Length: 66
Image 1 (cartoon, rainbow, N blue to C red):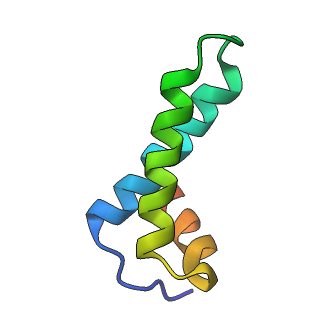
Image 2: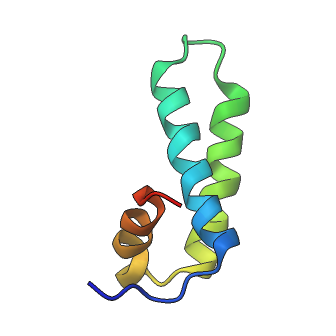
């Protein structure tokens, strides 16, 4: 598969989003406000910079070894 040319910063943002999401999934209730806020910030960046049709491709690209 040929990937779009995503900037390294955008790929890192997707990796950060994935790590934050996983941390939120494993956090205790009542101790996750900072993680939820971080996830919102990262989500906004991704939605603004990546067309919806390319979001799955970016997620796959972010999972690849650097």
